[in-house]
Image (spheres, rainbow, N blue to C red):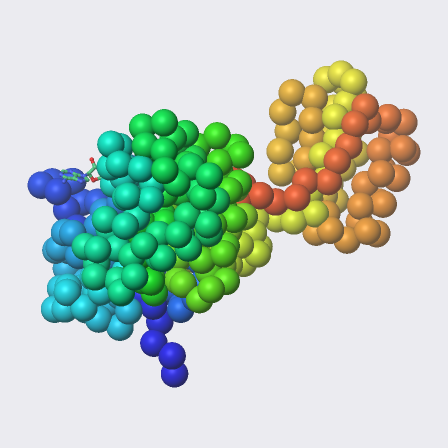
Length: 311
Ligand SMILES: Nc1ncnc2c1ncn2[C@@H]1O[C@H](COP(=O)(O)OP(=O)(O)O)[C@@H](O)[C@H]1O
Ligand SMILES: [Mg+2]
């Protein structure tokens, strides 16, 4: 059996009275992209800090690259790289100089060639000899990741890699992350953005109130919310009320606000047809209708609203 890239069990961490992690468990398989999803202050960076040996957990176990983070922090460090929310890039140096400097510090055999290769890979060749002060946010972030890849770490930690980037830079970052995973690197990333997790991750874990409240592939998570929702918009309140009357006996109405109505059909065409027939029989003409594809936002909303009382 192949050892997972990362294992975390019953991890706990408090800052004074603030219990940030209250028994966190998850596993990340080798060569996959794992997204840790959570709102601001959920404890994502705290988990990254524990896994990258920057701070110690109060309780629980974690292994990275097969090594225990508390017992063998040096071994762990040899297998990982960390790109923080705050880029470790030196502004006064050029992109090339930054890369060569890190290459020398990490004793790679040919830091000049390594820098050339990474500049190419991260689309920075044209800007290679410019000082980093002149770089856009996206370019800095790319350089930061390029620097973190020197020495070929097998596991890369990216803490909110697209935070503050414009849409174009964000897309480039996604491409970079995909390329990393395609080459066999395990990517652990944190994000507040559901669409980012949806776009990139093989597996997603949702951190909420100190625990992982859901963990699975995007499609597994989406199965937690009803599918086959059809939304209708009506001309006025009266029509909306008539529609509710025509449908509520046999269909589950999941949402009703303004002049819209959302009906659960399970995606079954016969059932969908039946909804339309009922509306026609009631002499209703919706001004608009659409099928609602469940998004991770729906999942997140459902999960976090269920769990709020459990504090
Ligand atoms: N060194 C620290 N000292 C005290 N509190 C901290 C420290 N680091 C993080 N926290 C607190 O822990 C909680 C989680 O923080 P963090 O892990 O940074 O969340 P996230 O990365 O998900 O936004 C926050 O309430 C934060 O204020
Ligand atoms: Mg953070």
